[in-house]
Length: 329
Image (tube, rainbow, N blue to C red; front, side):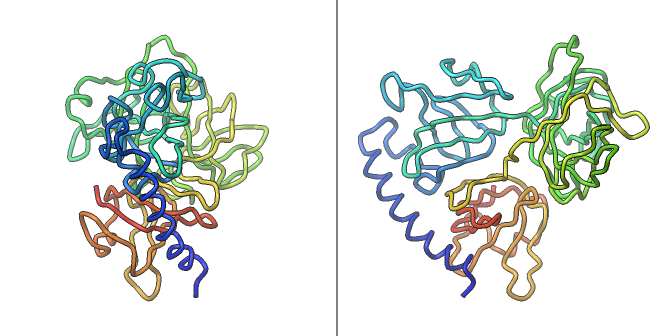
């Protein structure tokens, strides 16, 4: 039997035990059963967009912070690399920010909440249509929110948080105006076509879809690395931007082995529907399921479509997310 599939079956038992433990631990606690454990009794790492506060609400689950965990407890809160622990949740984060929550396996006590934007820079193009589009640092951002799109203009400096689609565009969940005096910008993504002169940068790990050339004379990082590029360029010149700094980071879809995970994102590689290949990709992250995997809000045939939003509950196993439950959002 395939070892990854054996791990899925083992995971089912682990999740059941975690769910029972979580249920017992929250009876009579803050919010009672309202705290849904990342959708499956707690998964260790949960990542997705914030939908509300009064705790931090994400993926339909409420994550306790600070004194709601225990008197005197402080949840670590990181905003674009800066520690904001001790501040109120809504003073640090905003609805629409895509965050990563690290919490107990069997509870919703947030030990750390980390937010990193996709990019920050000036709007150099704005086109309305079936998809409302803005261009920032060579990246294409789809802005579904009509009022947000109407409120921003060419040359505005903005911060963007969003999900990558199969074309390498960013589907914005948040577009935040910044001060026009900002004169250093940044963009994050995966490295491809690395050379001594620089590299291409885009939202998908295989380098497919929309990318921008980054000129970096010290030489590019390894292909597949996830990096943050700092630049003073306001837009690409001749199709490229010049990096002043390049920092390697961990991607949002990168998890330690054997970690229970709750991942929200868009289907970027659909299920082929052929043979024994029961897999698809979320933002380039391969997800594997088997006959016993549960589906909510749809069926496995829906996974033949790209850019559907899904929430996957499962375990990280050798770079593959082994799914016990897949929910269509």
